Length: 297
Length: 214
Image (cartoon, rainbow over all chains, first blue to last red; front, side, top):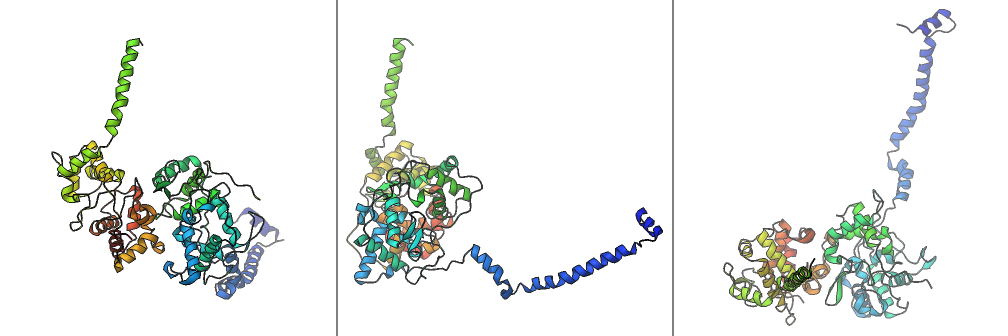
């Protein structure tokens, strides 16, 4: 049954309905002529040469970070330079003994930089060393590596930094330099800093974090975040209170703490907390009293 | 409330307060008697764990001397409730009262902990164990033993037992049991998650090291 309006058109003879079919066909032909080469070009784009611009855009979003492995722990050379490297490592692992006068709390460098500053995704020294000098928004200037370490002493260790030419600072820089030997200068190495986390499904919540803390952290860090001592020294670090990092420390940022926790805690069981749990417990830990941020000079 | 009521109430309260410490207090002397002479239904601990709680390496009976009390209490409770498997210890722990468990644990905790003997040359296995104990193997996600069990494995009370001076046969058996899932009474599955990542030769190495940690 032909629609009535087409019948009417036929009767008037002013316009034959066949024109409609012809017009539609013409549109298809034109569209095909335009679209086919484009489709063909799309298929060709799968070759690496034509993909390059597309890939370059992706890389810019997710930069490819070169991999690096520090030298073996027992490969520190003999001689005077080796002795200084070893001192640096000792300061790093037993800051409370080897650099006591510069520390104002109960922490050791190795509490946040695990495996003697070697572990990827735990702010390893080898990745940090090749990133300095660098501009830091934190103090609005270009910082040397020594100045960056001084920041750790002031904030994370709530103390005063050893002078740039002091034996402690020289030793720490030597240890870092030795760990980073062979790493490309200026590179953003895989495993450097802490692994970036997505935002949690819901806003970080200290009350939920308290539950995560009780179930996962108390065994080592204590119900009041006070840490656990053995032989008068902290065997497990305090997470808040007078012996912990101050409010100016990087770890006082919920994001940084969440990134550290997610990848590394509980020790030996990293990556077992959910994204939400990591953010919540970081929020909880950083909701407590701690030493204030020291005034900037 | 009459004056007399108040007085009776006060006396009862006083008695309760006075009774509390004696009920909670663990008595190392009573524990010593238990260890040396046993109880009606329990064999003396020292029969297997040695005259001074030093254990019996040949049979794989663990050293208890100087172990932290909370850890020992938990193990005895776990044996008695079936959370830790061992036919001898389960049967034995079930005959002990909560009080006896605390006393025995108190006694063994009060004995001198392992002391470093004169330095020995480490066997190749023990040297490899020393490396693992101090530094772990983070390439495989294994933290250092020292990180939770203290420097030289002295233990960090209440949850992390001392390892120093423990005999290798007991320790390797336990690590293997964590690894296979035969032992599961660790808090938060912490020991399991580490042992699962260890190879048998790594278990042998750390066990050899902790017999005489340097």
